Image 1: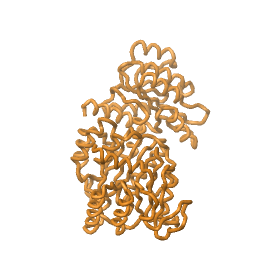
Image 2: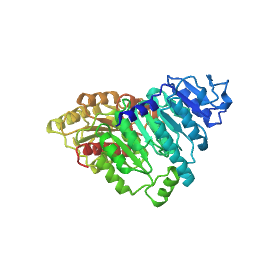
Image 3: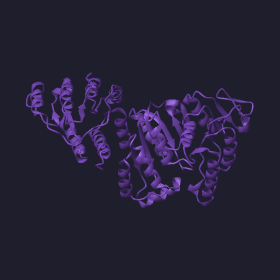
Image 4: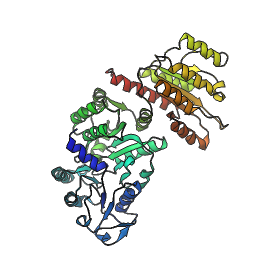
Length: 469
């Protein structure tokens, strides 16, 4: 991407310091919550609270300033927690104080009609002339967790697990829901950008930027519609060569198109048109945001799959059948074990085990979990098997845990992906068990449907990289 644009976005996401215009001492005010979010984020640079009522006062242990002109040094990022009719003047003053980026929470722009559209057009012209990139308006802001930046009005977001998955969402509400789902599923987040009405910062610039970002490995998108689909597809085509891009889009029915237009001023086309275009650009198109999160989790934790061969092990056949069917429907294969491996399976598995793929080791493998490790060792050493999946149901809390760390170590030995479907984990300990397995290096999913879709998407990504569609 253009070096000047990249440097401007670096200043936005990695600012030396930041200011909140419209800051407040009242916790019921947006300006207080925005200030609290910046403070709790932990960014090393200074934060300047700005409001006429704060001149000479202190808020959250920080000195306040009556006007933008009063802050003692330049600030690269300005969070504008003021009404829409004060944005233009604040933006001009911020630029004089060194602003490279601005977050605009306010609505009242093109989503409300002609007058709002005219105001948004003026804001864009001003920002472009001043060299300022804007997140929003009509948004919840931006995060850069590895850097400690929380430029939203949600201070709890500062507590999210830091990682290497970045999310760009047109909708602030859906973006927040996706972040919550990531938190619930132990997914580490790098950046979050709620782009709202997209004054002069849109999907094309952001996928290009994140493709170069040192703290991002996986790019996730929630899309309501595109103003310039060609620009996005051109940017995504280049970015997807560097990093996987996963997209979920809503707004394909007539009623939802109207809602999208009134929400962030976007109009969507048909699902089929988008799906085909995304596929050509190397973007993985998923059906809901839980699938988006599950796939991002696996992609961020695992080495790339290098083929379609999947091996599945279980002590309960039903879930393995669901995983296998979902994988096969996506173009996956379940290679048979070699004659030598079959002989070894018969040697350690219980009587009457049929050494086929998927491999059902009956209830014996529930308490003797070493069978999973022996099966994984054999399967992943086989050249035509490219991924292993363990389906394990703990059922009741008797102190038995799936050996996630050992399972992950075998996969690492062969540099192949391996994941687990851990079902029916015991009561309140279930989340702990899943989290422990994730932390041990085995991405886990609590249903065979989620595990199967995730495997299917890993295969789809591989097929797109091979130009197979």
